[in-house]
Image 1 (cartoon, rainbow, N blue to C red):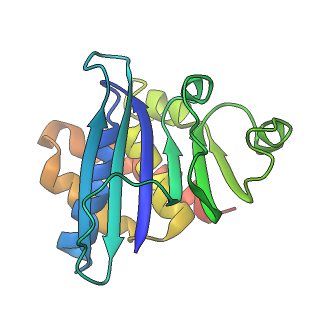
Image 2 (cartoon, one colour):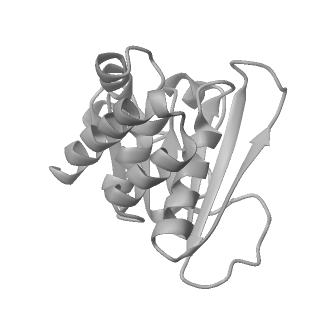
Length: 185
């Protein structure tokens, strides 16, 4: 089983990304999947968590994800508000939306032990392609590129299923650009 934890702020789409990943895995790749949110104070901008589990077998665990294979951080400022690295497995993948480079993060003791830390300027991609700093599908593409948990084609189909028609093409392009960037590493 692969377990993913999404760190975001209320309103920036962490749960939507978790749900899109689960949908791609279950509907288009024939896997078992769960996607669910965890909210604290229910207000826009407050830290929120999203979770996705994907497995080849039936998933019977319905608890929050504590030990995860992948952490996705939609907003870099969350690193100062909560411990986004908690529970990341030794070989886990940590993907963060930032304009800073990986080496800069590795100088920080909070991140220096992470073997698979990936930085991506998802905000820049979102602004260029979507015209707004909404990074959830960009980071979904990055997560898929970093982990191979599902194919990018399955992500495209999930976006077609879940998002409004007017948003689909730009979001697929944003996800694919991030995916391609990670595949090139």
